[in-house]
Amino acid sequence: MNEILVNIQHRDFNAIILKQGAQLIHFQPTGSNPLFWSAQLSTFEKGRAFRGGIPICWPWFGKSQFPSHGFARIMDWTLSKRIDTDDRIILTWELYDSQQTRQIWPYKFTLVLTMILQKAGVLLNLTIKTSQKTTGALHTYFFVDKINDISISGLGEYYFDALNSEYQEKCEQVTKIIQEIDRVYIKPENLSYLVFSDRYIVIDHRGASDVVLWNPWCEKSKELIDMKENDYTHMVCIETARINTPLEPCDTLECELSILEFV
Figure 1 (tube, rainbow, N blue to C red):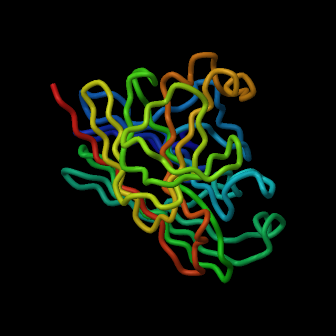
Figure 2: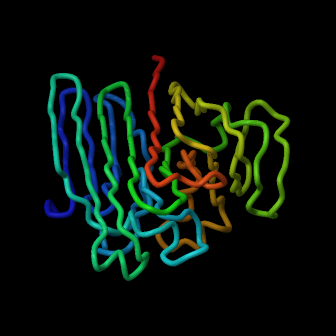
């Protein structure tokens, strides 16, 4: 197991990163609840996407090509640098084109992911260098106590509803999730807010053109082999994305997740 995971124990937090995809699958401040949700039924199978944490979708987002959401999340990344300090840990991950990736996507590229972990939250900075325009997302799965009790704001006014292929204007200022939802907010605000119980999470979308909001709800969950019956009640995806405005050949996508808790 140690060959595929990086386990971090810090005075202020603990974290787990899956080397496949450089995927942060667990982050928990000391004395608090986890920030992310991960599917207990998801496996660490090589070449198969792990559901949870922050998968990196690249060089495309969605199911338009195979594999779904691109190949960056199913390739082994290299941990090129680690810096430990009293209050944070900084990890630098790298992924380069290879014979394996060129069989899927025939272009050279360099991906550099900088991951800053500290008690106040997480910062991910993904830098893309390639000759092609691409799409992608930092596909964050947040852990929530109860899906019915959360509120989400700061998403923007307009969204594409992937469930019925329509563009709609959002009238409500706060979004509640009471059914399956799959929206791409096409003019998002810079900051989104997830509030539940005693936790207040601020998501800073930097370099994004879109924010995706997703929860499969009950019926869709039954189609996902790595989700238990009630898993949808404890997760919501709020994703920092570049979909309608592709990433340029040298571009950056970044999200900062700040946690405020009230006792």
